[in-house]
Every structure is written in structure tokens, then in C-alpha cells.
Length: 266
Image (tube, rainbow, N blue to C red):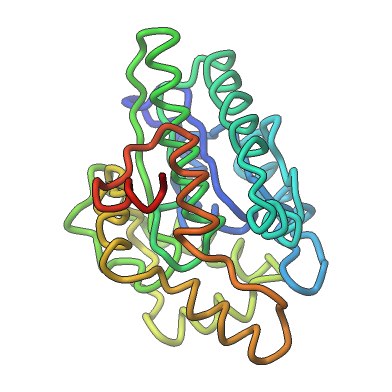
């Protein structure tokens, strides 16, 4: 196994759903991070993904953190729809405390992409936790994001950390993804769409949450239209809305929200 990345120190990975770590599988091999995930990845079918992620973490020498599949996906959406902002504030305090206790120097996690509200709130939690660690300890953590949705190399030019996988590392990554039963179909689809070579580079970039929040003031995030479609299909009863449900949480976490959203939020 490759040695830990010498420039990152103790590392943590924070994701919304188990399985996202497959995107940066080689980074996990290199950094052997403390791993946090907000949900169990059960989605609409109620089947937890944690067992598969536990096997993956053991294989790369990573350890689960205190927040490990804390909620089902349905519970997260219910918490959002019910306006229970306090749940996310409690998560923030727990995450920041864990980062301090483990002397974490580097955090990587989901990007804010507007595709799934849990992904976006995960990024807000990370950014807020990093700020809280600095406030409490004076330590400035390296804070990286990685894209979960779409073309894996579309933003490679923005990468601050770029890992180019040799054939052995790429083979381990694809084998791990295909062994992850719950996402095997998605993995095969991605391989068909982008090709094997697209997964031979892993890119970590600086957080783009502020830019995405500005964008959401102009164009609502995609999860709203996705939710509308699923409500019309009878799969969901309510739509998670950015302004009504997600923005109040982001504001409560201490993330600076665009001026154009302030009057509405008040």
C-alpha cells in the first residue's frame, strides 16, 4: 500500500452517502483517513450501504469516525422538510470536535453541486467545521472538495491535488467499485459513458460553495426539478426546496449566504 500523503498530515474524508469515497479511492489508499458519512445510503429502497463501505475502509486502512451512517436518507429529508435546523448544528459541533480530537490537518469531501441536498449540506458542514476548528484552535486545515456527479475529469484543471493512478491503482479502484454491490450498475454506466481512463485521475479542488450559492440565487438547484418529477410519479409526497428548506440550514451553520438571499431568508 502506498504511504500516506506526506503533505496532508492526518486526513479526514466527509461524505453525505457511503459509496462516494469510491471517487477518490486512491486518495484513501494514500491518506488512510478518518471517514465520516452522514447517511447509511439507503435511498428509497431502505437498504443500507454501510457494510460495503466498512469492507472498503478496512481494505484501504481507513477508520470510520463518530458520524457513520447516522441517518437514513429518508430521515435526512424528513429533518429538512420539518425545518429541524438544530440537528445539523449538532452535527457541526460533533464533526468539528472530532477533527480537533484527531488532530486532523486535511479534510476532503463532497462538492456542492445542486444535484442532491444532502451532498450540498455535507459541503456546508465541512466548510463550517473547518472554520470552527480554526476559531477554536487557530489551526488552518486544508479543505478540499471532489465532484460526485457527472464527468470525473471535467474540473481537473481546477485541482489543487491531482493524483494520477498507475494501472495497478486504477485496477484496485475499479475492482473496489464493482465489488460495491449497491452502486455496481452506476459504476458500469459511468465506465460506459466516460471510459476507464477517466477514473485514472483523482482531483481535489478548493471549496466552491460560495460560487454555487451565488448560482442558486439565479438558477434553482437541480434537486428541485428532480424532486418535482418524483412527486409527480408518486414516489415522494413533498419536494425539498432550496430557499425553504436548505438555505436556513446553511445560514444556521454560519456559511455566508449571498446578499440577494438575505431579505428572503429574513
